[in-house]
Image 1: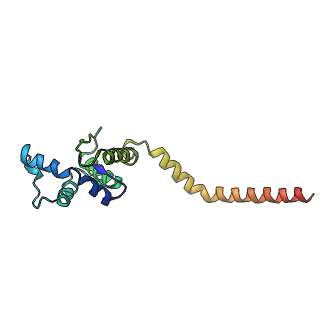
Image 2 (image 1 turned 120 degrees about the horizontal axis):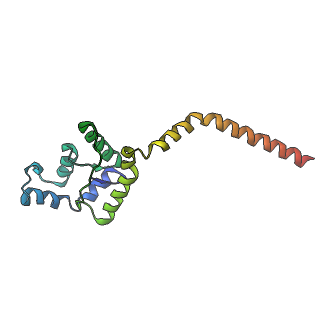
Length: 149
């Protein structure tokens, strides 16, 4: 996987090394499944995404790929990422950060309590907002009365 804030950014970043990676599997490792007809970088990216062997794009694209694997397999305990050097080291580190922050929590259950709290807060927001506005109005009125006295 390689992710960035936008799909276009991720595509630009993997131009750094994806071609060499493909050529290794095509010419050295004799991995015939990596055959890409035209052989241009965009076609390589599309092959990774469409064949389901990885994800290049946004954290949502990566999460969708993991979900496809979960659905196909019925679930699994762990997923390993291949250190592929598609992008430069800085972009690769950022990709790992985005995966850790936005993809992994969806499947580890860590985000669920926060999502549940957000849903509860959203459901009760209007009542709390009304109470807060009433409290501010009450204290403002009380203050104005005290100032006038």
